[in-house]
Image 1 (cartoon, rainbow, N blue to C red):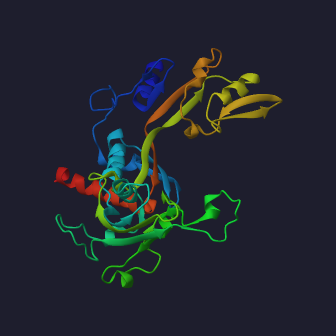
Image 2 (cartoon, rainbow, N blue to C red; image 1 turned 90 degrees about the vertical axis):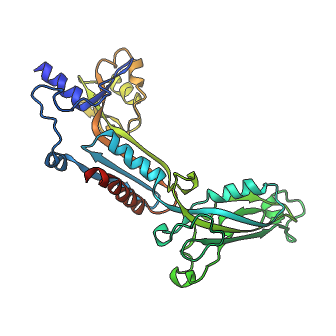
Image 3 (cartoon, rainbow, N blue to C red; image 1 turned 30 degrees about the horizontal axis):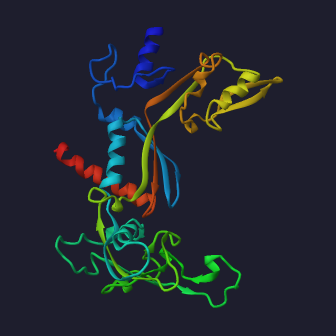
Length: 337
């Protein structure tokens, strides 16, 4: 019985110890375990695989993928980082820049500004094509001049009171439609994702006047085209109390984990610790510093349960993951025949 439990733990859990990590490698391949049929079976995979959306809003997405290997989870992450297209500033035509920010640095900053637009509505610009068209280019104008505020108090030292337009924000970027873009896109739909990104600071007499061309691209070519700010995955934590933890030890145990992981309850007048939400833990392994506590807790991760977290910087989380899934399927077609 003990041997069977050890084998099951080896197959399904990555165990974190005080001085190392056990069961790191995937071992459930055919013929490795007596009594287990680990041959690939599509029906078995479809039965066990699932995707659970935990949280989704305009800027972030968290979901669980259960029943897969690390290679598949990492494939989604890599595709989302490098192969899902977006629109970003590619060319900057500087007419006048008397700020302290050099033209090259200013152009680099503008390229990293996320643009709110669906790139599926545009084509890739042909290589060597200097002049863009309405089907492959978005155009923005940035024209800001700093002046003194004639109504500022004489004893004021606040630049916000002394100067007008002394900070250049993304809200100053004006979309200039090309061709029939004004008919295709309602006013206000083509814009920077955030209107409060600081681009530069000016002083009276300084001016920025430039034109930007945004094109469609992928993160494999340049990081500015990546649709996500961060894309990560981790295994689901599995925390088990091997024996009851009561009294002051329960309070001490809760402080060893991230907030919300260990809950202390009153049971018949005693403080008793229980595992409330293990997915919140970051596995600092602080508990192993306490001699009395490290023997009552087992820390592990579920081998085939991945928590995927994406912070989306350019479009909504849904379309980006949908595009990543479509790209993943298309890349698998040559292998499937």
